[in-house]
Image 1 (cartoon, rainbow, N blue to C red):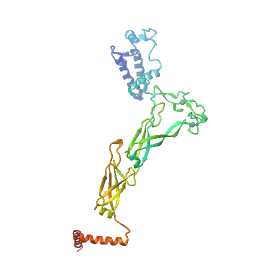
Image 2 (image 1 turned 45 degrees about the horizontal axis):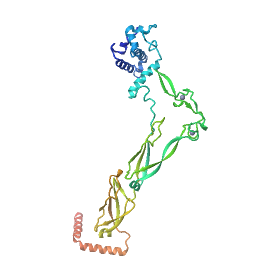
Image 3 (image 1 turned 90 degrees about the vertical axis):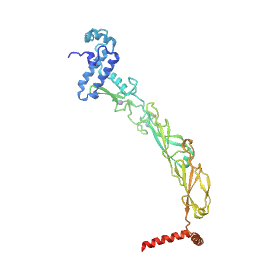
Image 4 (image 1 turned 90 degrees about the horizontal axis):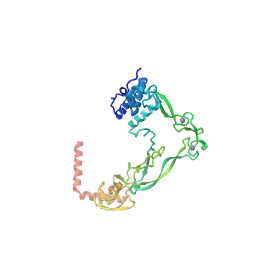
Length: 382
Ligand SMILES: [Zn+2]
Ligand SMILES: [Zn+2]
């Protein structure tokens, strides 16, 4: 089969610039990529080789000049018109392909050319730590020592993973390379060695403590500052305190998720606190002072106005929760719950009956209201 013209192969004109030639070659390389030619691999391989051969010549100014002058003859039978290295395209196909593959790979990944971005060091995982705090702690903020799981070098095998600290032996599958080559379609693929997972070494007798990993999980203690004002759902990020990175990669972050425990007497709504205070019937009717606990651990005196009904709210300014990051302070609301007296002595009962009688005489309107209600029910019955 006669050799096709190199310009024709790459689909460029004779006057094409080096850049245009490169572009045209990449286009062909993508077109004949094995992933796109699964059912026609052999033809694609031939086309790829042809494009590769053309590019090898046209990308080189000297070779291009020779080709322009002598055509294919420039590279045949020792008529070297300045072309070094004999016939292009007949060299190591895998390495030629790997050149273009790197090139393409760099393009696809937005990386900086050959090999760039391939062995990117793996960042450690982020860790989540759930921390339950009391409402009092959420009010004042706290410093707390927490235990975070971490991987540390195994002391039993000095991190080698082999029992007794013996040196691991070279992996027989990859001869210590960590990678194996396999033929896939028409090109060679390098992949991580399945026997040693890319480490190049294997362990005959794995360490019993770490199971051959060379690392063990061990809790690490960490002092954390929980600011005042945290709520359930608040996340605190500790940069770099997550899992260690692999191969020198950056550490992950540690996120502390706050859960504020339910309080015995205070209910929280944002920065405000609510609490129900039982008040005796007499105090509610006559008025008086009560003492209520506050979240800061102190007590506050609150005046109950005479005639207070159940459900009446009073506000204690700035006795609520602090806002996160010092943005003000909430209030505390006290709701009165009037208690009906129980377990009365006979004297108390007597007093209450007297009280009731006095109330009826004192409040004829109420009396007439009950009469009208009774009248309504009577009419319903008849
Ligand atoms: Zn191996
Ligand atoms: Zn070990």
